[in-house]
Length: 99
Image (cartoon, rainbow, N blue to C red; front, side, top):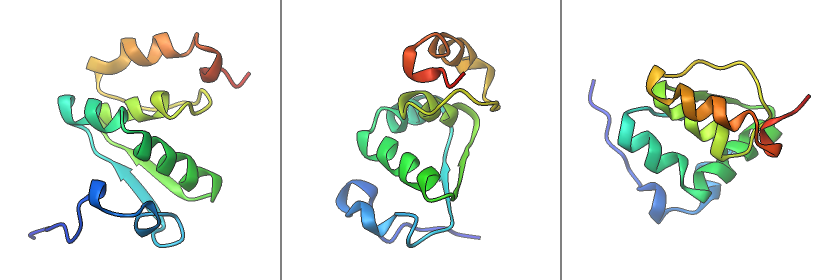
C-alpha cells in the first residue's frame, strides 16, 4: 500500500484536519519527528479540539510527548521508553495534574 499526502500540514487550514472532518487523529512517533510534532502549537491545538469533540486521539511511540505539550490532564498512556522520563517530569507540572 502506498500512502501519499495530498496537502502538507503547515500549508493547510486546521479546519481541513479537524474533528468535523475526521473521526480520529494519529500522532506518529519516531524520535526527532515526534519531538518536532509535539512542539507544534497547531498540533497541540488540534489534539485538544479532537478530545473536546469526543473524538479519538492515538499517539504512537514517542508521539505521546504531545500529550504533555498539549497540556492534557494526567492519564494512563503508553510510550517509548526513551520519552518516559520527560512524561514523568510533566506529571509534577500544574497543567499535568487532573487530580
